[in-house]
Amino acid sequence: SQTIHQWPATLVQPVGSPLSLECTVEGTSNPNLYWYRQAAGRGLQLLFYSVGIGQISSEVPQNLSASRPQDRQFILSSKKLLLSDSGFYLCAWSEGGAHLYGYTFGSGTRLTVV
Amino acid sequence: SQQGEEDPQALSIQEGENATMNCSYKTSINNLQWYRQNSGRGLVHLILIRSNEREKHSGRLRVTLDTSKKSSSLLITASRAADTASYFCATVSTGANSKLTFGKGITLSVRP
Image (cartoon, rainbow over all chains, first blue to last red; front, side, top):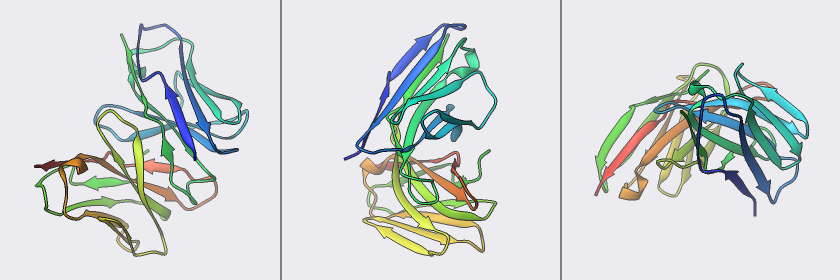
């Protein structure tokens, strides 16, 4: 069966420090991968998605970047964190596009920038 | 940008009652999906209804879709305290490479 792992669960980082959040999927090949951010009391904002290795699409301009070095690995990064980067970050995968299937989400990373 | 708008924003009911949550959207869709999120956790996919479908059932869940009104409803029958969570509708617009766009969610509290 397919599983998705996301870590760490919580992270407190100072302003200006780098960030690396990792997400891996097991039990499937060539998944579509997504990074979402959820601010307190808000819906989910799509940050990045990837349909294949090395293929990254950015949905909103921001201080973050994403990479997909392996088929089932998706990494969210920042060189210098801002206070506004605080939030709940969720990785998700789907088998094909959203017009076909629902998404499976990881358990999320709570990032607090101080 | 968010497409789905859920209504109400918060709902509190007694265990055993039915909970009805609504979602409206603005553009033509390929499908509409409902998700559940327990506090501090990831989202769990509940049900997907396609634009050519009007109603779908899954256990105690019933979802309807009215494309003429651009709206959907999620009904949870015989609610339980364990149904307490946030519920999100998400839409997939028509067109290639479309992705899920989420609403802000509804907070459901089921009192035991």
